[in-house]
Structures are given as structure tokens and as C-alpha cells.
Length: 270
Ligand SMILES: NC(=O)c1ccc[n+]([C@@H]2O[C@H](COP(=O)([O-])OP(=O)(O)OC[C@H]3O[C@@H](n4cnc5c(N)ncnc54)[C@H](O)[C@@H]3O)[C@@H](O)[C@H]2O)c1
Image (tube, rainbow, N blue to C red; front, side, top):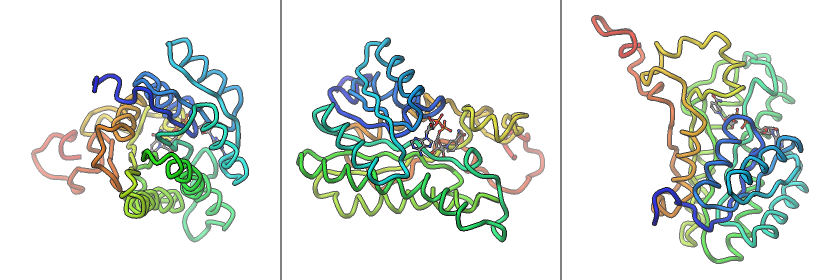
């Protein structure tokens, strides 16, 4: 297998592929790795831009518009993607987040509506897409891979964003369920848990940079292309024996010993 073309001739759905940050980079990365890609987004202009971007680079992309919160949209989107690409080999779910959708809120004040919105946009829709795509994988009989974008907020507590943390943590268990239930049919699911990635959403959360150079051992935020690289690997046959896993891409932000230590530079000790 040619290393730069890990997804040659594969057919991949990227849900949230119209996004300006991770979604756009993942759609582009998947196409550059040789796949035909179906980009799904609620925003039609973004879908058109993302499709044009991939096409101009010599890739093959289809744009599909719909709302991931609506089950009938999910059914239509998966069927359209399979029809246009002649099947589906991988599903990537990128839609998600917290502060773009609702204000940071202490748990004692969280409303049911807030909780349900965040669960819907980070976990429930992933189950819906997985459910529909699994049926396609099983009909094809050729296996398949699902990769979901998680967050370090699912690995450690997400203060004032408990629903976000709980939803992202749920992705890893969903991945284990898919792996255990469908592993014998060569169907895999994994999560890529992002740290702080240089996107519009991250800039909204940390307008002053958030002291990243001091806090992140890597000394900088991640780049969306670095998340795309992890997704391409996990979606590809190179990861054929990896399933049910949560791969954290955070420049070691959450690997650090949590207490200050003497005589150690701040970028190492925290
Ligand atoms: N940026 C970070 O630092 C960071 C950190 C941790 C995790 N993440 C995760 O990255 C993912 C998002 O990446 P991003 O912030 O770069 O966003 P992005 O720029 O990729 O945009 C996401 C896309 O989702 C689309 N979308 C929103 N609601 C939708 C709906 N109901 N139906 C269909 N499409 C919808 C938006 O139109 C947008 O184009 C999320 O899962 C988020 O939790 C990001």
C-alpha cells in the first residue's frame, strides 16, 4: 500500500465535512488519501465550498445537505451517499462541540433542553449514522470503519460542560460496542480525542490563546491537518487490527503530572 494513498478507491462519508476547521481538513485529508468523499453538513454554502476545494485539488467529492439531529435526514443522507459513491467503506463523524451551541453552565443549573441538545449533537447523532451505515456495511459484506471525533473533555472532566464530557466519553463506549458486536464482520470503530486544535471554535473559547505554549508540552495548539492524519490512518486498512480505541491527539496536554514540581521548567512541569 502506498503510504500517501491509504484510502485509495475507498468511499467515505464525512459528517460535518463543510466545517471550516476539523471538518474541512478531514474531508480534504480523506480525499488526498485517495478516497471518494461524501461531505454532509447543515450549511449548504459550506458544503459547496468544501466540495469545490476538493475538486480543485483533483479529488472526488459529493455534497449532501441535512440536519444530523433528524433521523429521516440521517437515513436519506446515508442512502444518498451510498448511491452516489456506489457504496460506503468508512464513516467519519465530526459534528460536535459545546460553546457554539449553548453557554458554559454549572451542572446544578443545566436544563434538560441544554443536556439533550449537547447529547444529540455529540453522541446520539453518531449512533444514528453508525446504525444506518452498519446496515450498508453488512449488505456489502466487505467490512467497514467508523471514526468519530471526540475530545479530551471526554477523557477528563469538562467543567461547566458536563453534557459535552459525558457525550464525548460515550463515543468510546459506542466504539467498543460496534467493535464487539461487528468485529467478526471486519467492521471497526475508533475515536480521535482532540486536544486544543487551532479552529474557529477554539479561538472562540480561548481568544487570548489560553496560555497554550505554557500548558501544552508540544508548545502549540494542534492543527486540523494533524487530526485529519489520525482519522485517515484509523479509517484505512493500515489500522485493520485496531478497534474500540480512543486515540488522544492533544500534544500531551492531558499526559502531564497535574501538580507543580520544583526546579522543572513550566513547559515541562505545567
Ligand atoms: N477545535 C477544537 O479545539 C476541538 C477540541 C476538541 C474537540 N473538537 C471537536 O471537533 C469537532 C468539530 O470541529 P470544529 O470545531 O473544527 O468544527 P468545524 O469547523 O469542522 O464545523 C463543524 C460543522 O458541523 C456542522 N454542523 C453543525 N450542526 C450540524 C447539524 N445539526 N447537522 C449537520 N451539520 C452540522 C457545521 O455547519 C460545521 O460546518 C467537534 O466534534 C468538536 O467536539 C474540537
